Image 1: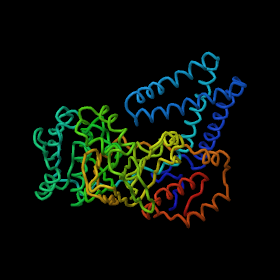
Image 2: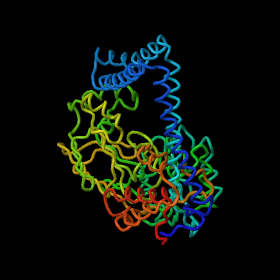
Image 3: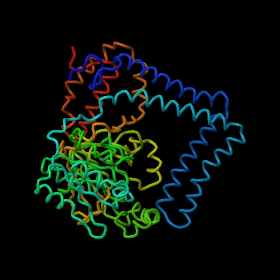
Image 4: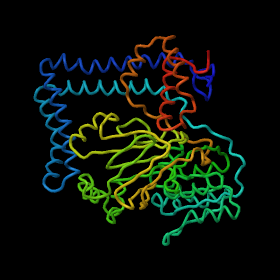
Length: 498
């Protein structure tokens, strides 16, 4: 890969790469200065009380985590006592700090650490400039678009916003789903293609979108997403405007295509994820729709203690995952800005499945979650395929939020670039992912100097070991490729340029 002379942004030149690197270097240094200030303000103003102050704060955090674990994994008086402890622990810390005259010290230290985190994120965020998915010309233009609309989705957005009439005015044929009878949307879509439809679209939930997307991919025609659902996870990761569903129809007149991957679970497509374990068990409880919180709190103790639900195991690429309480398999990995990596997917064309497995059987494992992705009870990885087995013949699965029961083993795979999604040329887009804080990477960035020859030499050696096609070479390949490109930008080295 040869980087354009104007910088490392493939979309075109902006500021010189050295200017961006210099700004990020100073942001990293500011992050360490703020972190030092957060420690220094306690040491200077709290003096000998600083150790007790830090100890009390840490003890409160640990107590909250342990109490929260017992609150969700037990019933009866122990649950209520645990909930009380979750509330009283931080209140007690605030009261003690206030009586000791240290409340402002704690607030100042917390503010310094918060700013250190923000500047650290800003310093590392420069590595995501090349993340937007590539756009392709929308050719040929759809002459017979066919749109399926669910009038119940999103609290009735379809009819309230007049989407059927607006779509018809643009030349689309609209199929309005019935309020009273179930509709086989995949069958409706296949019949439309057989009648000559050259574009399929959906205004509805992610589950409906996945079924129609599978038909569009099967016939090699474009797929249109209209943000009329409740959460619109797939639409958000495509960069669409979920506040204005009608704007999605602009793709019919002025659109571009995104070639995205399609997840498959036992032959059924999914656009977001398939979930196994606790969540899948809970959503299939008859009372869940009417009382989500109560049903969840009632089911979790049995699920965590292993008294309900199948015992799962999974093979994700070369990695074996035993007895997870919850397992999520996603169409491309989620971002890295939180403890489990869940939130939004910066790309939908990486060619790998994202896998998140959580096991929290004891209070010790709950406390261990403080270690983030290094926690013993948390596994976050990517793989080209995942096979889930269990000690039962059939297991519950949540497929894009829809409940199902599938025979084991359940096989999840991904079809790279199988789906051509037509989106408006002008749309909000996908914001750069919030990078996870890595103090070691920040330190290398803060201490680096322009023109570090030794770093470039190491990266040239790394280029031979991490080819650009690694994103589709197997488990972890995508992560390795991203880390390699990020490191190249970190020291200003341009792969492919002597």
